[in-house]
Image (cartoon, rainbow, N blue to C red):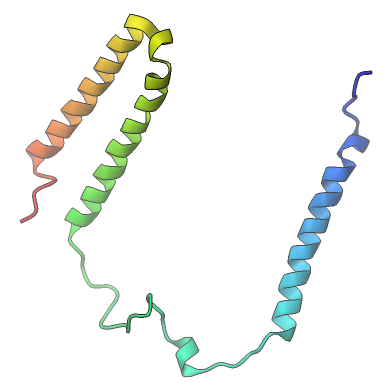
Length: 123
């Protein structure tokens, strides 16, 4: 017996989505209406992990921090591409090995470029 894709077949999914959406809307509405509404000085102050706020939040931060973070993400994502290659190492054969050496060489060139530019030097 072949199952047909009729609009009636999607009714359980649509019903489940409507029930879930209704639950969310109802829960948010009820908690907003019956919840406490006490506004105090402590509730209106910014909360930073339990630490008192000191000074201006707009103080300049060294760009080196962000540069190292971006470079870490860049090289970390590049390393992630090596995992599928390692899993399929035998099926890819010699051409896969050559392509990965080219990839790693390009990655290494980029790393040497970053070092040469002094992006990882902390003064």
